[in-house]
Length: 547
Image 1 (cartoon, rainbow, N blue to C red):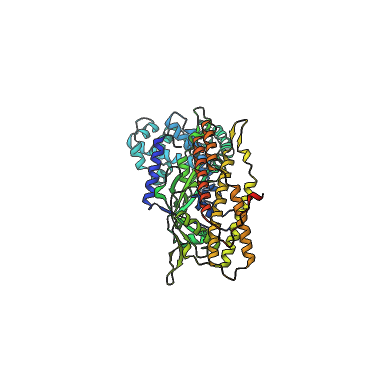
Image 2: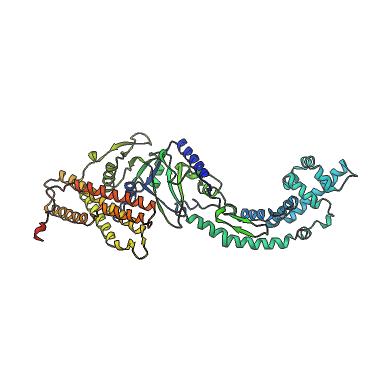
C-alpha cells in the first residue's frame, strides 16, 4: 500500500516517466455499437470518460487471474512457520525436512544424508583423522568441503547453509538411526506437519481464495494500446471487425486522479501470488494473522500487468484503480487527439460522432485500405465533407428522437423530492448527479437533433413527403415542450447547493461537481436556444393569452 505522500509522488513520477518514454499517446479501440437506450462509446467521448470494470470480466480467461500454485503456497506457508524458530541451523534443517515430507521425498532425502555422511567420513580421515567430531569438522571446513562434493550430491544439498545444517544434525548419527521416523520424531515434525497441513487447508479455503477474490472485486481496469491507430488485429478483435472506432488519447497530460497507468508485460510464465502478498504473516506464537493494511498492493498490481506472450501484438497499457466492491467506474480522461472511423462504421453512428467531435473540436479521420499493400492509411473527415443520404438522415433523426424519448422516460421515474430529506437532514448525491447527468444527455441530443434536422432541411427536395414534414414538426413540438420542462433555473440550483455546503450537509467535492454539472447544463440550454427550427417545421407558438 502507498503509505505516504512522498511514496505516492514517487509512484506518480515513475508512472509519468514510463508514459513519456512510450511516446505519451495511447489508443483505445471501441466496438461503437448502436443502441437505442445508450450509445455507450459515443456518450463516453461526449463526457470525456472511459469505462473501467473488474478484471474478472476480461476476454482472456487467464487475464488478471493470478496463478494459484498449491505447492508454492505450501512452501510459502512452511517458510512463514519456520521463520519464527530462533536458531538458524534448526530453522534451515526443519525447513528442508518439511519440504521433503510435503513432496513425499523423505526416503530420497535420507539416502542423500547417508551418502553425505559417507563423504564427510572419508574427508575427515584424509584431513583430520584424530580431530573433533565429524559434524564439527564439517562445519569448520564447510567451504572447502562443499567445493569438493560430487556434483550430484552438491545439487541435492543445495548450498553451504544447508550443508552446515544437515552436517550439524546428522553427521554424527549412527547409520541405522537415520530413518524417517527418527528424523521426524527428533523435532516432533510429524505432529507439527499434520497441524501445518490442517492449517494450510483452512488458510487456503477460508482466507486465501476468498481474500484474493475480494481484492480483485475492488479493482477496475481500462485497457489501451500503444500500437497506433493502424493495428489491423486490434481493428478486428476490439473494433467490431472494422465497424468501430479508434480513439487517440494524449496521456502526456495525465494526472494522479486517473489511476495507476502502467504497461502490460508479456511472459510465457504465469505469475503466482504468495500469502505475504495478501497480507498474511505468522505471529511469534505460531498463529496465522491477516492484516489488510499489510497487503502488498504494488506486487499484486504487477501481477495484474502480466499476460501471455501471444497477446504481445496489443502493446497494452492499463489504467488500474481500487474502489468499491463490484462497482464499475468512469474515469476522467486526458485530451482526445483524434478519432479514426472504421471502414464499416454505421452511418448513424458516424453522423452522431461527427456532431460530437465538431462540438468538442476533435479531429476525425476515415480509415483507408491501401490498394497495393497490406497497409492502412487515413484521411480527414468532418460534417462539411460528410456524404448525405436522405434515407440515412431520416433513420438518424428517428434514432435520436427515440433516444431522447428513452431518457425522458428515465427522468419521469426519478423523484426530485427524494434528493433532500429535511428531517435527517441528508442529501442523496447519487440521485442528484444521476438526474443532472440524464438532463445533460437529453439536452445534448436535443442540440444534435435541432442541428441535424436543419441540415436535413437544406437538402430536402420534392421527394420529401408532407407526412415526413408532419412527423418532423410533431417531434420538434415534443422536443420544445421537453426543453421547457427541463428549464431548471441554474442560479436556483447553484444557490441551493451553496446553502447545503454552508450548512455542512454536503462535502466540498460534491459541491464542486454539482456546480460544474449545473453550469454544463446551462451552457447546453443556451446552445439549444441559439438554434431556430427551419421555418417549414417550426412549431406554432401557443397564444398564452387564450389559455
